[in-house]
Image (cartoon, rainbow, N blue to C red; front, side, top):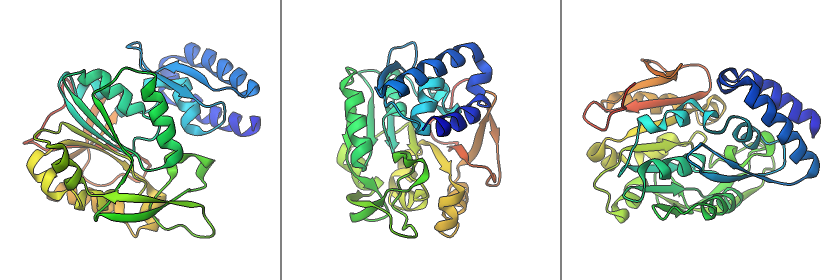
Length: 291
């Protein structure tokens, strides 16, 4: 376990969050090591605003990155306050343990709304436990997967790091554990919620981005939210280029796509080769502030 943890820490030393606060992150790494040795989860504050969440005592990349980097674990998370604000409306698809959900709930406040969509049993338990640590009635949790059609599907427990963040509806090779989940469409959940406004979607669905967008075509055309979406090369390859189709679909529907680089938005006109998140912004929809 410690050897695997060391490899993850080596990766994180090269992280922009470490370069921003090397002494702070180094001190946190010592604290994380102590918690891992004791086998006890720990409680952290995601930002100075006080969002609290549990971090399990283990070497999963999600846990390590959150403990060390907090809201700098992803560039888009660090800039979330430029995308939504008081009274805002956000949909977190693939909420996992809730880092985007918790931060967004603080930013939108009691007058806003965050819908957190998470189908996996393990991640869903952690998400609900983290929400229970915080007084956030503006958050609604939907224990479903979003897809192109309503029904049921298998959520495969991808072996990557034994981390629920990598679980996927995409069929996997070999004997892979899975669980049955309910599938809904983006259009149906937004219609059910009576959504007349949607500022931002964060979508992390391990290669099923195209299916999610197809199931929400009417809502996207009507509301034109900003969309943070993941480029997942491995999942895209398995799905015959699904992520490239997503990139092209968004461009074809009028979205302009950017990557976050050094705290600013850089336009991109073709899908990058590297794994990471991109931000799609429609010129007729909500806009980032100060970027």
